[in-house]
Length: 193
Image 1 (cartoon, helix red, strand yellow):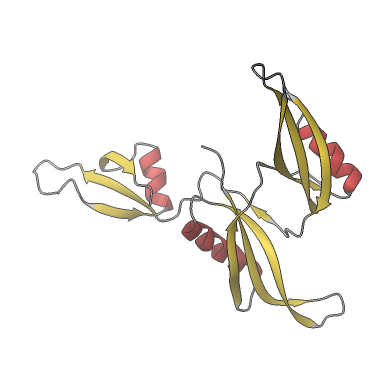
Image 2: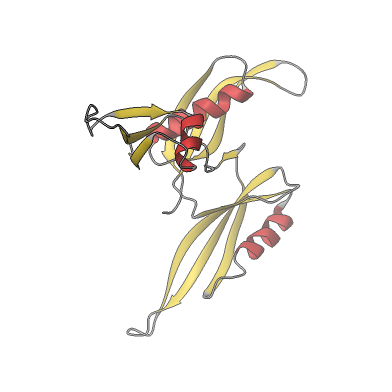
């Protein structure tokens, strides 16, 4: 399953270089399965960084095919790549655009990092544009971020006292127990919401 990236714009008060509080609206990128999950994830991530109130002003699906973070880089660059494919029936070449979000310190490094990201590409491609992105930070999904995952579980009992349609919210400790077969549950199925 490929990642779906959502660009979330967040408005909050921030100290500028002069120490003056200023209201800013900044875009962030989150990996999520739906708009609802994107809103939940950006709320969670921003709560850790912003001590005051903040407001999510916009959420939209971002048009990035791939995200490539690189160490020792602090800015994000949008790279437009034209993929060239040859249609054998018509004899014409077909072009399609993809966009990468690449982390780098400057345009030259962004070009080098984009080339590095595309090194295993079998087809022909051309890097046609690199622009600095306003994206402030990227929050990918990592395995283990599933707090509050809803699972369908049937408790193991000697008498038939539990209904198979029982649902529960599982916290991290219970997930660990389930993953390590150290639980009182059988027939665990994760339910996508």
